Amino acid sequence: MTFSTDSLGHTGIIFLQKNLQRSKFLYHGFIDNINFCNPEILFLIARASIETTSSLAYFLYNLRTFYNGKLKYIDIEHVLNRLDFGSKSPDIRKDASYLTESVNVITMIQTADKLLTEIANDDEESKEKINDFSTVYEILSEYCHPNYFSSIHVGRPMAGIGLIVFHELPKLEKLKGSHLDLVLPAMEFNCSVYFKFYDMTFSLLTKNEITPFLIKGSKTNSI
Image (cartoon, rainbow, N blue to C red; front, side):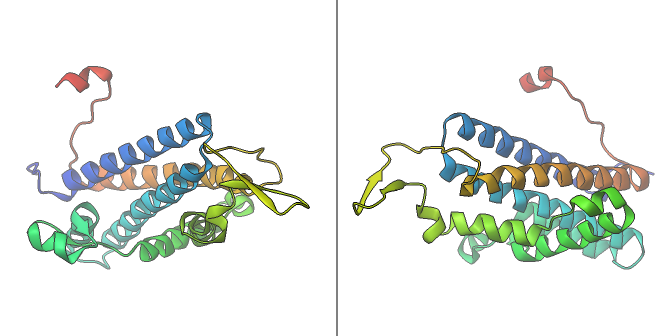
């Protein structure tokens, strides 16, 4: 077999590594904003992390379908192309011929839930701890959209006197008993599931395809 940069093994691994790097950057940002006491950004980052993991799940689900003989090669290529070069904006796609229509984020999240159900059915320990992406994503979105929950951290009502003290800077209140106790478990859940999906995808690709060598190390930063 001849190695090709257009092969599924090459493009699949490249997608995996880009997805992993994005996830890593989001986690770094999440930790930074815990240290900087910025709860508003925490919810935005947590939701973006859920979306990133869901895109990985969408690829894994379709890759398994392909290897099970229920999806043509051209179809799995199309899936990967949409994940890699997808854009929601028709105007942006019009100005860049290499872009294509992106996968709907809700579709990816629902696909992630399908995989979670399979994992839970195969692993009794996971079954006890299982959550679902749709519920977590919906809760996080409540804090990202401009509605009630997105505004409750910007100020503190003064009970009995009808005044609200607005914070000059973002303020991270005590987690216990507050709405912030939702965001840390959401990220913990996402992190634990992410590496299950990543390992499963990596294993499928390296088992069935010729894949590029991966070099880990800080020295590659200077290349």
